[in-house]
Image (cartoon, rainbow, N blue to C red; front, side, top):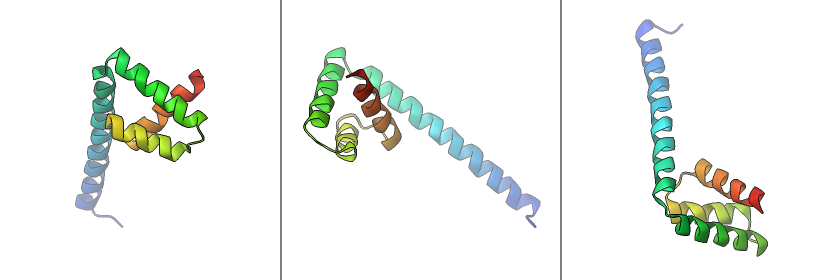
Length: 86
């Protein structure tokens, strides 16, 4: 049986993790907003070219992460968004 202090620590960690995830999401949104429309257009063109050229999804996501600083999930969502626009 968990003691009260152990339970409090677990709840505090869950809240802390949720807070960190929200901060990361906000930072990724700011990074995207800081990109100019021209930069976004160039990145989208590069993604489309890579996908049409036979690059795998992990390769393209890695490229987006390197170019933007996005986390894994945000980069994957961005690639998916570009892919559905084609």
